[in-house]
Amino acid sequence: MNIGNDTGDGVGEGGGDEVGIGDGTRAVRAGLPEPVKNEPTLPGPVFAAHFHLPGEPTGPYTYGRDENPTWTHLERAIAELEAPGEPRGAETVVFASGMAAISAVLLSHAKAGDVVVLPDDGYQALPLLREQLEAYGVEVRTAPTAGDAQLALLDGARLLWLETPSNPGLDVCDVRRLADAAHAAGALVAVDNTLATPLGQRPLELGADFSVASGTKGLTGHGDLLLGYVTCRDAELAARVRRWRKIVGAIPGPMEAWLAHRSLATLQLRAARQSANALALAEALAARPEVSGLRHPGLPGDPAHQTASAQMRSYGCVVSFTLPDRAHAERFLAALRLVDDATSFGGVRSTAERRGRWGGDAVAEGFIRFSAGAEDTPDLVADVLRGLDEAARG
Ligand SMILES: *Cc1c(COP(=O)(O)O)cnc(C)c1O
Image 1 (spheres, rainbow, N blue to C red):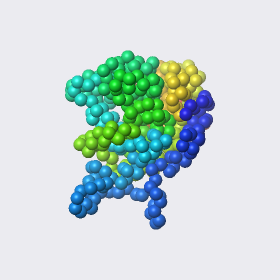
Image 2: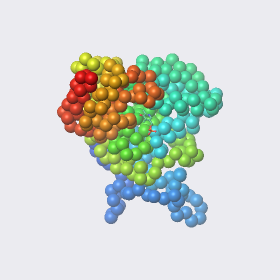
Image 3: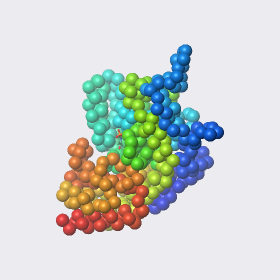
Image 4: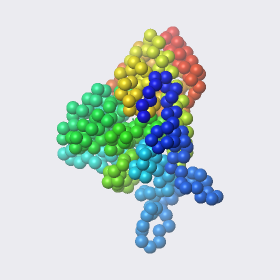
């Protein structure tokens, strides 16, 4: 489990674990059905609003808002990656987007009078969800991810929401410690696992009840689809989330689900290269005088490094840092040739953005969120250093 090195080279290669096969092997085979003669290895997307259903309406496939065989394969694949010890024990429910998955957990489990604890530095749409929860009579408490500050708010809570590493600040909290305290207080625990991906971190093994993520980012990694999922071990919790999907209808299209499953085969390769690129970039940025507030959990000196090394299996592809001012940051972004100025992260093509342009996060005007892609490391580092030089000239 422990990454146990500071080089980043071993990231994602930590082959053996309790199940006896490596992450790369697990990723290429995840969710594949039993082979059938003359059928493809991964069956193509099933486009169906309804299925033939004579007589009594029994499952598994009746109506397209409830179930689809393409989702079933993907759900099995994600469950195998999130909880490899028990491929049939954990259950995944896929959604149209990460926010659909997050909203499904929070809105299907919190009711008027309940207390929900959120991070105050989480994904930028969480405050919108907070307003909605409050409108429904839920009491919402917030604290920062760093320092396990949410521990102080658990009294009487129904649900604790964690996001680690947090986006975009890259703070990390101790999932096991928070989950134990939350369970002692009678609360359920959900972890937003978007940034780490299931190969980088397994929240259920760390004690969480739900691992929730946007599949839009590193999980699928090509920046061409939106997806979300919820994985849990408890069948009753999963049934509530599934029921919520049916009520709200926040379902992924079969094409998106199939593309996502296809992308999982390269998850280990992508994540290993992208993590290594992020660490190389962070090391190069550390030597630059105009860079402040540099954060990456893989940097030995990072405040999150110790906790991240104990609970994560790789450190992820995101690096954040601050340039002196807005104009400097804009010059840097404009000077990059191999890096697209775009939001989102986790894709095979590097992206970066001045996060303050959205207005939703508490970040400086010159704050850059950088997502390392799968380019060759020397090319990417050289482009970034050249971009910094150009930006510094004014
Ligand atoms: C992007 C993101 C989400 C939302 O996912 P969508 O697929 O865009 O709805 C949630 N949490 C985190 C940490 C994210 O980065």
